[in-house]
Length: 208
Image (cartoon, rainbow, N blue to C red):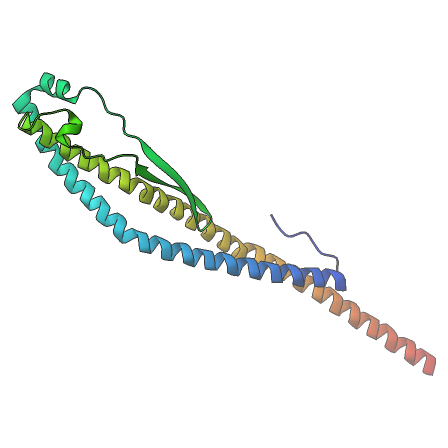
């Protein structure tokens, strides 16, 4: 939206200058926020990449183990060993990072279980136990990575929005406001020259 035209008066010029001051302060704050978001993203990027590599390695390791267990025990036996189904509870903690709402996830209990927790005797179905542990470790990595991935996505969105705001203020709003201030200043200067000319004519007519 273009700036509303200001009246060609001293008050109008003062309003334009005040708006420019506020605009410059707001743009400066947005630039600092953008720099902080970039720094935060870079600080998280390395650990996020490391975690993604761990997840990929664990997934690559888990599936062959599962296929071995399927071959050794059969689909029906694996289904029976997996009973009863397990619910994984997590705690969600809300927080704010640079004005961006995010959530931390923590498993309410250990994800990787012992034989006793699975209700199995030592030595029973070793291939199935190995497969279960492999996928539990994968699940643990995914739960730990989820908050960081969410934070990266939210920070990326906030950075894009802040960049758009800075660009709009710098490339559109500020030039329009400076142009409007220049128009008011030019009108005032022209009016002042006209007043001087009329005053000069008046003085010369009185002298004559």
